[in-house]
Amino acid sequence: MTAPPLAHLINELTKLPGLGGKSAARLAYHLLKRPTADVEALASAILDVKSKIFRCSICNNMTDVEPCVICSDTRRDPTVICVVEEAFNIPTIETTRDFRGVFHVLLGALSPLKGVGPQDIDVAGLVRRVQAGQIREVIVATNPNVEGEATALYIAQQLRPLEVRTTRLGFGLPVGGDLEYADQVTMSKALESRREI
Image (tube, rainbow, N blue to C red):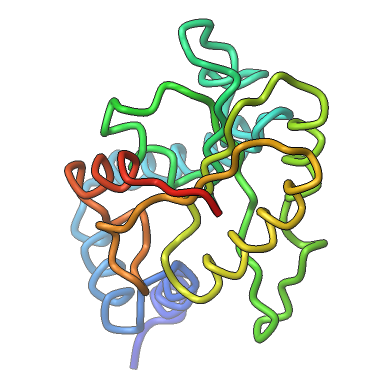
């Protein structure tokens, strides 16, 4: 029988993505072995992130400054927007050092089976950005799976009347995969071989 405080921690850890009961238990027992200062530092970092990180009002990226460092970087090309599903997709694209535009985070992907419709992702914000600025190209970098493809087609449909070049990443990326797991070379090739949608 697991002690109630430990069972509670394991239960909370299972709420994290990718952690089942066994992995959560392993982490909980690992934390018990760590010095109290290490566990307090982890708890403090988690609370710090929750209190200091927010969404950029321009692109929806996670940030602690307004606007985020990407949107405020004058060396970047503000006429090219790369659209991603989640903020954690941005570092994967950034590691290529091939993309020097800006980003727009959708906050998800269309998934009728999960009840996620157009009103649940930020395509409207993207459309407003295209309408308001001198945007030359929108690169749709949604995941190469059913939801990502549906989202890409929806974005293309919404942008078509605005007559902006809309491209989709070329694939070197595996269908059914996630951008966060793509290596630098694969991501670089995908950016190079993007296509009109």
